[in-house]
Image 1: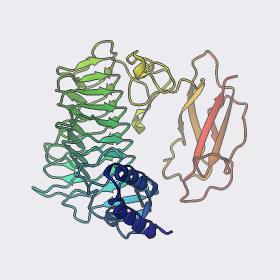
Image 2: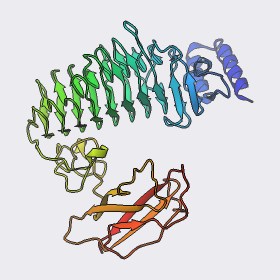
Image 3: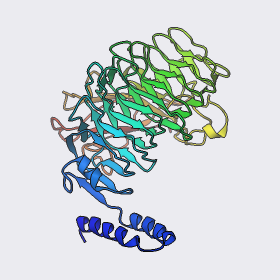
Image 4: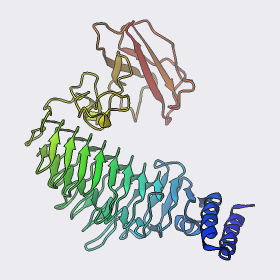
Length: 450
């Protein structure tokens, strides 16, 4: 039975079930829908994404093959998995009509409606025009691992606009969006929705309002905003403004913005965050509960609240926006001691968005570079690798091993692996198979202190 026969078969069963009693019909209909959920490929099975959505029923997957698609799509109440096969690096969605939303989800879609693995970009709202990357209303979908960029809306939020809805937004890149008006990133209100808006593990950067636009993240009520990174928002105000009640804002890293965080809503909890190096305000708490934060080096407003610190967080490489913590960071194990906040390795909470895995034993290598070479445009076919390291005990590196491969899965380092080198050197020159122009290579290192 091919895919289209399944669709016809599915329709015929639905028609026949109607003649059975109501209680049995409901049971059979639900079971049948689960059994007959299918994957519809675009453009193999349907020529456009919208055609794939129209041909689907709840529970189906619309699988979008790598490529660029020019469409404005509406989920039309379908609780389906809209999935970019190659992920956000190879599946691109831009609007056919740049004055309207690229994706609209406003017909009661629930949490089983998932948008995943797409690069969404290119609205261009003129004066009075509306056009967000994603518009969500009266729904609770999930937006996962997408790249939302270069959307411009004159009057309204340009990346993700949430009105009377409670989505889950996780693992996305939100960057280079612009707006003359309220917001260039994500703005949200969930109205009367009982469920929470959840915004976790996203990276927001370089969303630049060209007019009087405000923050990269604004609004919110009844939500959780956690483990996000905000950097390089240099527009009118800065990174985050929370105006609604009932929000928990924890374990976020806010660095290098025009301004940091403004909390205007009642019953807001702000804890375990790193808010450092912002040009203007660091943290304006308003009526919020503020505790266990690191607020340091901002232009003004550097009070971290109860049990907080004001210290250099010791990022791995702040210039390159690698905001992981060095092993010596004062932010490690400095978060709220409640077990609910414990890091994935089971230790006490680390401040900021990126927890340090303390199961690894020092020495730990960091600042692994190619010297003056730009890693995205290496000119020397025999580059030299340089590194430094941290060790928590009074000892030093006595050996290292470095590998180079053509992929980052490391089943084999086929380009170069000279084995363990018994040396305290913190540099070594590549001597493996010839490197080819235009190819991406990966390298890794491990150290030994005896």
